[in-house]
Length: 128
Image (cartoon, rainbow, N blue to C red):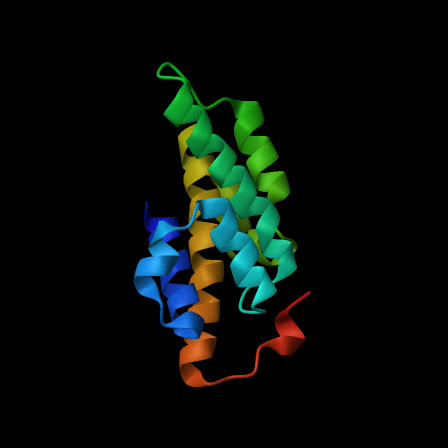
């Protein structure tokens, strides 16, 4: 999963323990990133909801994403995440495209923090 790989990359910038990071469950990776202060606390909601959807697919072979799932996913995103994809989400004609906007918003958020860490830019003021 691309989001998990991106989260692994973010954690790897701080910990340099790639194998150990890859073995952690997704939920623990999110908590670790927030605890290490390399991802804002407000980012957790969207990541946890994405994990919830992934688990639904993993445990129910016939699971179908519903409009309610996508609305709840969008609601779980931080305002910062929503801002990056608000136009695409609101104009998306299908549930699938709205879901994609949610996922891209999370991906962009994590990549923003990877970039800031690589640049050596202080991020404490961005962590809420």
